[in-house]
Image 1 (tube, rainbow, N blue to C red):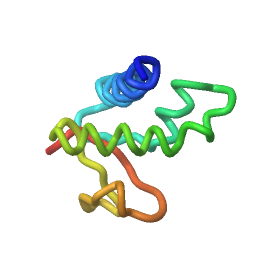
Image 2 (image 1 turned 30 degrees about the vertical axis):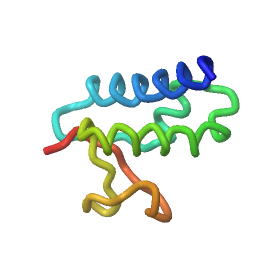
Image 3 (image 1 turned 90 degrees about the vertical axis):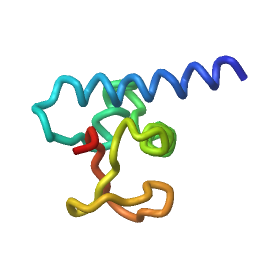
Image 4 (image 1 turned 135 degrees about the vertical axis):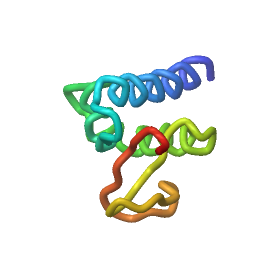
Length: 86
């Protein structure tokens, strides 16, 4: 359980770290975070990254968008982007 919690927090920190290194208003793809966390086998992390983005969005730390509009990452189908709130 503690390892799972650590993994969750690690992915959240990866997302936030990538966003901090982007230009203001820029966004990242969840795959950017998955690749940063695990360069080999990153695809296996995609659901976990989307879940981490959802937790961050629930806390108001990020926004998840699709075609420029805010969406609920839990129900959005297809590609999404993650950014700091405007």
